Structure formats: C-alpha cells, structure tokens
Image (cartoon, one colour):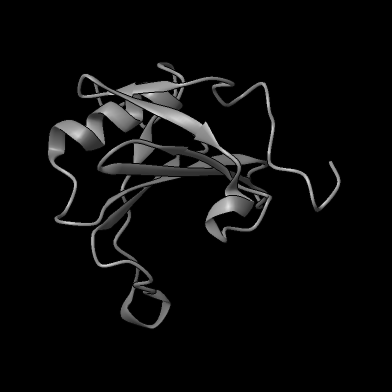
Length: 121
C-alpha cells in the first residue's frame, strides 16, 4: 500500500457500518486531516477510526470511537466492537500507565484486538 492511499484491508469493512442503529459512511481520512494509513467512518455524531498495527504479536486491529458532544455510550462502544472486530477475537479497552497516556480528543475511546483469547469461561 502506498503511503498516500487510504487503508484498505479484507480485515476491515469496505462499506458503511452500523452502530446503535446509525449508519456511518466510509470517508477518505485525508479529507479530515487524518493520515492515510487509517480507515475512517463518519456519521452525524459518531466518528470511527481504525488501523492495523504491527507489533510483537503480529498485525492487530485497533479502532477508536468518538463524539464531539460527549463520551460514547457503552452501547455505542459495543456497537463499534460488533461493526469492526471479528466475533471470534477478544477485544480490550486499555487504560495505559500515566506516562503512556495520550489524550488527543476529549470524548474518544480505543479498542484493541487481543493477540490471544482470554479463555475466561
């Protein structure tokens, strides 16, 4: 993938996504000032940004959900999980140590694909 092209992957939805009964449309990240190595979906009040992040456990899916007016609800966060992540992977919302914490957007939450199943049942 050229560094100037928006992220496209068979691991991400190619078209619109549904979250809490609302449709978010795929949007070119460059139109929003977001680097092209992200995939973006935008609705009236919600924005979703996703990336495939390389790491020691391989390439893992990372997605964020944000609103301008308030924190996303638990229903919206669960909707993001259902819309973006495969049903057979565990997903986590991580609160990093203070030195690693970055707050670019006041009302944004991040979900990460876990490299292994927790097996908590």
